Length: 196
Image (cartoon, rainbow, N blue to C red; front, side, top):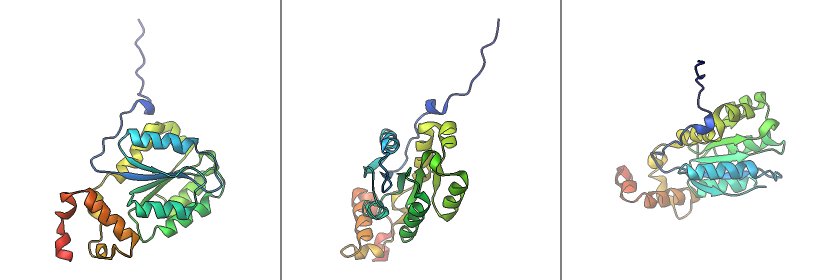
């Protein structure tokens, strides 16, 4: 009698990552890119895994996406870019996010983003660009688990308590103040009072 071959479970059958903290992700497809199927699938899996998602849809500018991520006090941006202008697009996004370095950028573009370009973009500051090979090895749930594990940290660890006082004029300070209010008592049990 032949023994059954032991096979590794497919990445698709891996369990969902369990979040320890609130994670908010902005999802979008880049400007001049009508390929929104991939980002819609990723959005749904992010949501079903417990993330809060602000979905902007397709054909979105870097400014739209960064503004939303800042105003929503998101931990991450997940972007689909199949239009060929990914190098400039991702670099410009990283440049605009320099004042808010806690916002991580994740992306994919099927085969349009070459392995060399992936290395360059990640060296420039993109957290991770997922290639078709990554998708094959990790599966969709594996990609989402990777994003969420990288973003799953205390929401308030990046709050600039002194800057919160500028909430009337600074959209980022306002977003952080709203996050503190959303967190309830936990949001103000930190050393906020010491910074006033």
